[in-house]
Length: 174
Image (cartoon, rainbow, N blue to C red; front, side, top):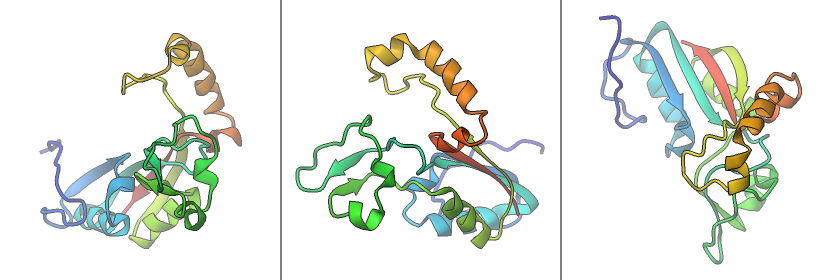
């Protein structure tokens, strides 16, 4: 069989035999798993030798927190447009915020993949697409999304600037 259907389940304890999958993709999911390191080890286990893992995950260099962050005392949501929340060290930020998910420094995610047995084939970044999936985009963003997407496409290609994309992408080999 050349193609298998998408599977869903517990990433920390995948109920599949070892060495059976050619590819796996974790698309903005690793940051939500209770034990991200165990999840990567499980994906490594089920991939065939030379299997490929694609990881899309939040980038801490992106100056806005794209997941829900709440103030600890009031449980009020921090607006998504509040800048530099990801830059606050977690030990310090934990006194003030409850984070809805993790986000990763680029070296941190790569080191975690390597510690799980993967070699990194490619690192890249993805910038915001402004498609408004949530339906809660401000009118200014909605009306300017084509221009914003054009600008985002150009910035995504600039060597230093591209590192500030909303997500980082790793292509890894077992």
